[in-house]
Image (cartoon, rainbow, N blue to C red; front, side, top):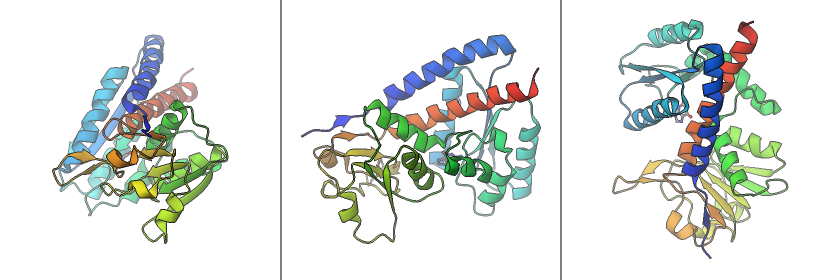
Length: 288
Ligand code: GUN
């Protein structure tokens, strides 16, 4: 058997296309484009690539982007001051501070300082609470992208055993909530889980968000399962690869996402969606 490949690039292009059409009409009506501020601190090469991709996507859908590339030595106070300035800036609808931050800066403090109405990552505790309840002001970008990919494959989540490997605040935890809200039976696995393979083998939908190259091998996957790879790693040859041993797992799975070209482009499309939502909600609340 050979798994059907879920094409994240194509699904992302169609989401961005829909956003571009709506943005053009709203920009014309309101005389202002949606604006996204992207803040990066330090020289993390992967972060630089992500930030560039986010800027490119803004241009594609007709948003304005404001980039703040700060030096590694930037103090927590300086970053907090920038966040406050962006909170007050009427041209900025969404604020994204790329993680990870240098060790001397508290990520929690920075996330807490972002105005929840501009928190397009949905990392602020207020938005995390909304996600928990199932009232989505902002969608958590990567998990929401995964949900779109599963839907694009025509797979229903209701009653399925969904296994999420990873419990991060960015992916694992919100991912589990979205699956639960679609009536999946959700198991969260992590580094201390015992008998991991026995659990993953029973997954109808398997989400890998581990951060380890080729972690999910074919013997861990049930025949016909939907396998979604959130990983973004470098292998021994410095080539981009996911958490899933794609070449072997595709022989067993029913559907699979590639890396690159799977979840990555969807995360960015969902970020654009959240920025447009922030723009529309601000106009609703602030403009006559
Ligand atoms: N670092 C890795 N993924 C993300 C993300 O989705 N948002 C932010 N801000 N930082 C990240």
